[in-house]
Length: 100
Image 1 (tube, rainbow, N blue to C red):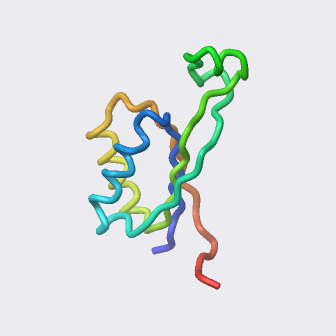
Image 2 (image 1 turned 30 degrees about the vertical axis):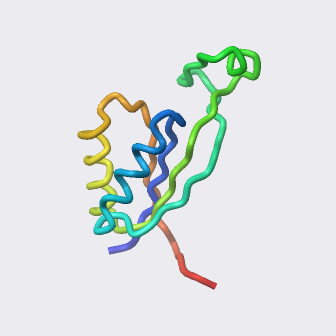
């Protein structure tokens, strides 16, 4: 089975909890990458004064590669553990990956 890339975009307020959940399941997620991002658009709730002025909200992005079955299990875990998380995700096929 080919690998897929799971990308999550979520509020910084729940990022540590999501990271802890992922780290607790090395059988599903052997590793992942996090980075900071800015959320823009109608679906982004702006709360802080600085967000209202800038027009975007700080977000964390988490990306991981693995089997589709494992990463769908990760989504199910996140849904059960954080049903109100309001995180956005997408799965895409990976053509190739490796180390150089």
